[in-house]
Amino acid sequence: MKHSVCVLGGGSFGTALANIMAKNGHQVSQWMRNEEQVEEINLTGLNSRYLPNAPLHRELLATSNLEQAIRDSDTVFVSIPSKSFEQVVQRIGPLLTADKILISTTKGFNPNRFELMSDVLRRNPVTKKIGVLSGPNLAKEIAAGQMTGSVIASADDKVRQRVIELLKSPTFRVYENTDSAGVELAGALKNIYAIVCGLAKALNVGENTMSMIMTRSLAEMSRFAVHFGANPMTFLGLAGMGDLIATCTSPLSRNYRVGFAIGSGQNLDEAIGGVGEVAEGVNTLKMVVGEAHKHGLYMPLAEGLSKLLFDGAKLESLIGSMMTGEQKWDVEFATNEEKNNV
Image (cartoon, rainbow, N blue to C red; front, side, top):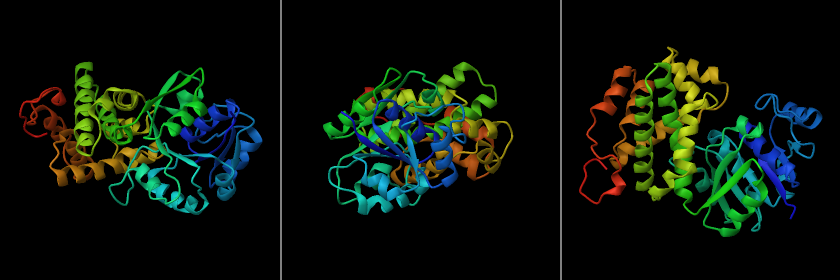
C-alpha cells in the first residue's frame, strides 16, 4: 500500500529515511526551513551539506511549506534537533488529525526541561498514534546502502506495523519493541558515552580499556533508564548495546568526534565548532547529571565527563571515577541481593 509521508528536518538522518521511503514507492515530502537546501534537493537530487555523496530518489520532494506537507501526509517523522523540536511540534499541532501517525527520530531531551521527544509529541491533544525510531543508525552508512537495523517502539501495534512497512528494504531492517521509554532513553543516553569513548580513543587507550568503558557505559545507561520506567532488557538490543557500539567506535558519530577533539587538546567550543553538526550528547550530559543528582543515581562516567567539560576538572578525575568508584556489581539486574549505589 502506498502511503504519504512527511519528514520534518533537512539533516542527514531525516534525509536518509526519506530516501528509503521514496525508493519504496511512497509519496514523500521533506520539510526544511532553508530555501536553498530545498532548491538544491529538488533540482540536483543532492543534500550536499549533510549527505554529499548520496544521490536522492527523484520522487523525494523537498519543501519549505510546512502546512501543506503535514496536511498531505498520513505519517510524520520528526527528525528535528532537540533544541528546535518543541517549537516545530507546536507549529504542526493545529494541522494534526486523529488518524496521523507521529514518529520521533531525535535522540535527546528537551533542553528546556527533563522531557523526552515523544513526551513533546504526546502533548498534542489530537493524535495518540506516536512512536520512537532508534538504533545504530549512522546516516552516511544508511545512505550508502550498508545493512542497518533499527527499532520502532510504540504501545500501538498499528504504529509499529506502519513504520516497518514504510522502511523495510534489502538494506534496512526494523524490529519492534513496546518499551518506548527504554528505546528512547537508550538513544539519548548513549551520546554521552560516545563523547567519553572518543576522548579515550584520542588518548590511545587499549582495547581492554575501551571494552571496559563501553560496558560500564551500558550499565550506567540502563541504571538511569530503569529508574524512569524502562525495561533493562531493552538495553541488550539494537537500541541499547547496538547503538552504543556504533556511536562509541565510529568517527561518523558526531559525539565521538567531539570527544576525540577534546582528547586531542581542543576545548569544548572548538570541538563542537569543528563537528559542524549538532552533537546532542553535550546538552544531554547536563540534563542527565542534574537528574542523577536529584534522584541519587550513581553515574560516575557521566559525572566525571561533566566535571571535565564544564567545571575545569582534570582528565584524571574521569579515569579515577571509573577505577575507584563504589559500584561493585557487574550486571546489577541479574541478582536480587542487596546492593549499594543502585
